[in-house]
Amino acid sequence: MDFFMTYIVPVLIVLGISAIFAFILAFLGEKLKVEVDPRIDKVRAHLPGINCGGCGFASCDAYARALIEGKAKVGDCNPTPDDDRAVIAELLHVEALKVQRKVAAVYCAGTMGEASKGIYHGHEDCTSENIIAGGVSFCEQGCLGGGTCVQACNYGALSMDEKRGVPVVDEDVCIACGACTQACPKKLIGLIPVSAKAHVACSCKSGGKQAIEQCTTSCSSCGLCAKNCPVKAIKVEGNLARIDYGKCNGCSLCATKCPRKCIVAREYGTDNRD
Amino acid sequence: MTITILGIIISALITNNIVFSQTLGICPFLGVSKKLKSAAGMGLAVTLVMTVSTLFTWVINKYVLLNLDMGYLRVIVFILVIAGLVQVLDILLKKFLPALYNAFGIYLALITTNCAVLGTAMLFGGDAPADIVTTFVTALFTGLGFLMALAVMAGVRERMETAHIPRFFKGFPIALLAAAIMAMAFFGFSTFSLGG
Image (cartoon, rainbow over all chains, first blue to last red; front, side, top):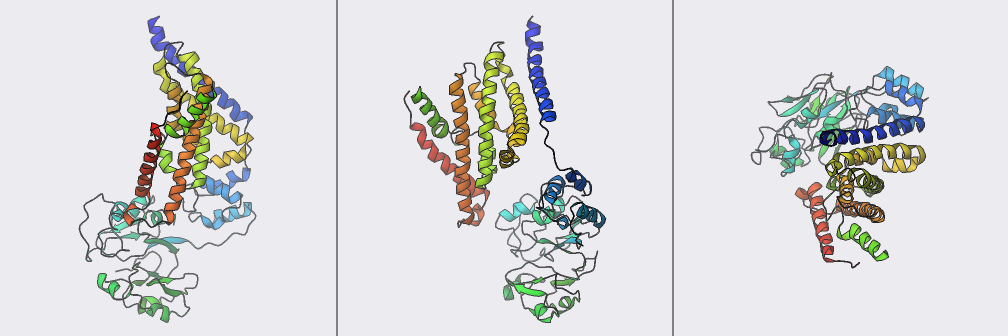
């Protein structure tokens, strides 16, 4: 009897309660099933299903639901191949938008080796380092070289250039999910069209003399790029040149005119920042 | 009776506030208090689940566990009941009150592992359980106290977004400081006692 009370009854109680709830849930789940739009599953089938979060929704399922409800656009998902995108657009009865494939690009040419404020001995992580007075790099906006973005990338598209201490993007692998742009505490990674011919590899906002003194490849906000651009695609705002890729015609004249070599000409799949 | 109920309400809401005095449910208190809207959703979901699950666990405790002298089974049984109830509520709300279901959002499912809910259930599922009315009222107002704590914190944090705060304190550190100051304010109520 003791054995029965000590070992069998507790097990029976727990099993009994589990069984009761299991039956209630099974019954309710079948009886009170909420019909969902069958298109959601169809749309979902044509999404990559990697739940990268680049579209701004928690998962591919959530994005598919938002598409059906009209809260998202077909072009919001970067990793979807063009033919799948066309199928989804047909399901939704909207016109398939031709979306330019994007890749991640780093807005810094590397500050490692430049003058630094001190030595950082903490956890090897940019976010941690950034919390302590914005990191030890002399450049407030510069890359800390901790490799947080490399860890954030689930596809192995980023690697650290040890010499310059900045991440390098493998454009064949990058799916432009945007995980690295979120991970970087300095917001140094952005998404640019894969066909872009020039890229500003600097985020320094000091401008002028201070920018020249603290880094060899900083944007000194001289404005030569903006002056020379034939289609007026470059603007110097907040002491920093930025290219509007909607207007850029790909002449890469800015890269040749930049006296600081912070605008770099680029080709698909190459990294010309040296 | 009314005085007792009033005392219970004030005690559950303020003097023994589940977050500030009993330090239960700290995770959602800090995690879901950035926006007033989500804080309200979380608070309401907790209130609902807390009330329903405490009633169920009270019954199971009194008529099953205590009868069989198996108080040690409480934690595992209560967790089972809470988890099952949350799922049942999830299904029922989805079917019959979709608006409320959407207002709760993801928080309803998250409550399964909320320590405030289990804590309240354990509080009334002791060896000498209180009567059912006291249990119901206290559970309800403990939940509302949780809702109030989240709403107050969300209000403070929304203000802090625009305030001038030293760079090192921005974000989470200042939220912890605000929570500490608020908890001290609530500590001031602890000397109050209502007769009856």
